[in-house]
Length: 191
Image (cartoon, rainbow, N blue to C red; front, side):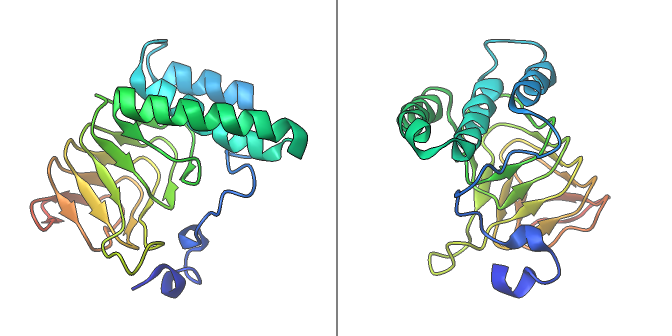
């Protein structure tokens, strides 16, 4: 299935073109950054915190008037590239990210999903993205309270249900039911 086949059942599959501020609307930018800081153990040197910080700034700038947005866009682009290269976490602002997301054990993270829900934990060497080059918007939707193990790969227009656990090095190409525990290559339900 493609994102366009799925968007009627779940609007989270609709691609974000980045034309507006897609940060969670129920919290201001300062409180959101403070919450991310607490989620990452109140550690100013947490690589996951800095990747999320610039992701949040990238979204926030889209709500500014155009004259203010121009210098903020330049700053965002420079810092996005610096963070992605220095800490190994690629998280573009067009990915809609919920609250209290924890990027644990930085490095090798390519996080190009349509949606990442609230209270999600993502570990190192994780890849979210497309499954085919002719389907560039077919990206996963990650539900709330999902645990994703090191080295997991989640590809295509699939939905990872709330409270699911994706085991280390699992390769997921099909929908995952809420609460399921998945492991293996290809991933199958193990709990």
